[in-house]
Length: 172
Image 1 (cartoon, rainbow, N blue to C red):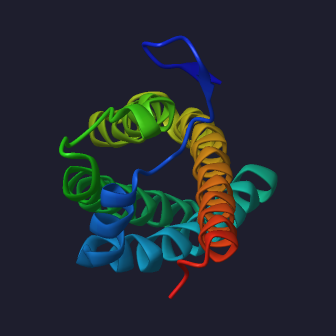
Image 2: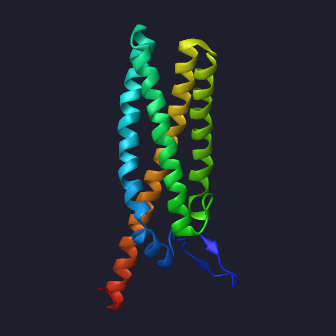
Image 3: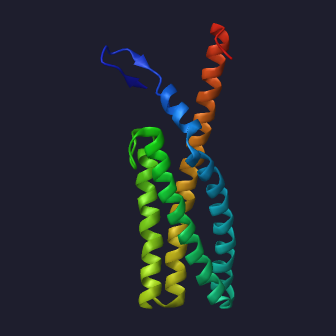
C-alpha cells in the first residue's frame, strides 16, 4: 500500500490509464512479446549445451557459440525494452514500476558482458567460462521470474479495472 498526501491508503497500480494506453499502442510491446520467449528458448538450448560440455567435456564450440548468441539476444531485448519503457513511462530505465527488474537486469547484463570479456581474453579456461555463463544464466532466470510476476500483476490489474468498469456500467 502507498499513502497519498492526504494520508489515506490506496492500492498501488502498475500502470495508470495513460501508461496502459501507451503500452498498448507501442510497437515495442509486440517486440518484447516476441523477443522474451525467443530469448527463453535460446537460453534453454544454451543451458543444455553448457551442461553437456561440463558433464562430458564435449561440445565446447557449440556451448560457447550458444552463450554468445544468448548474450546478443539479451542485448537486443534490453535495448528494445529500454525503448519500450521510455514509450510507456517516459524514461529509458528505472521507471518506478520496473525499478527492481531493471536493477537485476543490470546484473544480468554485467555477467553476460563479463563472459564475453573473459572469452575474448582467454581467461578462466573453458570450465571457468562455463561457470561464469551459469552464474549469468542464474541471474537471468531470477530476472525472468521478476518479469513474469510483473506480467501477472498487470493482467490482474487489467482484470480488476475491467470488472470495476463493468460494475459502473462504463465497460465498452
